[in-house]
Image 1 (cartoon, one colour):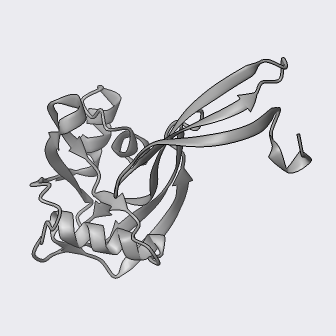
Image 2 (cartoon, one colour):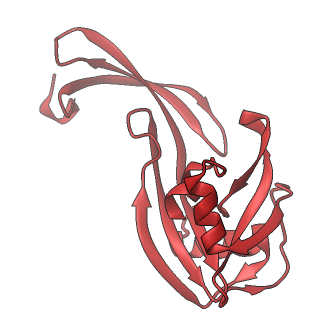
Length: 174
């Protein structure tokens, strides 16, 4: 096996794309494990994205309440989404904030990035703080049908601490 096929302690043999769509890809990598045995890594790649914690001048946070199909439940989430081809993470954040919640901001702070579940998901989500947000009109081109939930940031923190907000990005950012 060539050295360029080494991934950490694993030797990469080949990749089989199991499923691919506009939004995600699932693939299996055949590898030789550190113990010398054959192995498979099943990986999901939803692409890179941006997530936004939006605050107005009164320190109210804006969340989205929407139906999460995979979990068959309504949930409070941060606005955010997948970065389009050629788009920078900050541009994605601005677009998603306006599309999903109808909000705009002129003051943005990059809070860093996170990986959701790095053992099985190949992703990167940049987090932004949008300050002094103002209300405009949501366009909702993806038909996500979110309801805007505005509350004091202190209440959102309490909800995270009491286990009432289950969306991992929202809990991390708040």
